[in-house]
Amino acid sequence: MVFCSRLVAMNGKLFLIVGPSGSGKGTVIESLKKRHPDYVFPVSCTTRMPRPGEVDGDVYSYVSKDDFVKWIREGRFLEWAEVHQNHYYGMLKKPVFDALNAGKVVVREIDIQGYTSVAKIVPADNLVGIFILVKDLDELKRRILSRGKLPDEEVERRLESARREIAQSHLCRYQIESVHGQIERMVHDTEAIFEKELRSRD
Image (cartoon, rainbow, N blue to C red; front, side, top):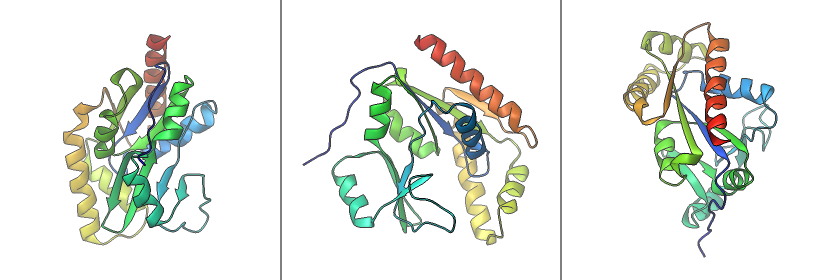
């Protein structure tokens, strides 16, 4: 039996914060969580094991690979991906559609591949893409390295992925530049987009 979930009302908005690893999209999400507790921030499902300090249901919901594959077959995901042919990650339809049908603001960080998948399912009137644009790839490299030691090939893989994502940034309705040391400005610009889109909804 295939799982079905659909939008039955059109008042909610799904804001997707898009960008490559190290662009700052996670930092924007964390700031929005503190400033807007009324927003809905759906968690991802993943088949990887929790890392030390991670709590199930906080950022990720940890599920078995068998369950994840079963849910793919049942059509439960808005988007999903297999990372490095090892672990699955995905966003379930139901919590997102339930919130949108209730007229809620839903916020989620995602990569450009996931964004294009969601855009095929969620109506354009309910979807807003905001791309966090990094023009200085040397700065992006410094941010990636600041998170911990990585093999050179992994750093280069992430930079190449960033180049591909940046080339597709025009697919999102808005672009915001990520500049080192200007997180507050980036959050402010994001909130301004939210306000504009929500005014147009009302």
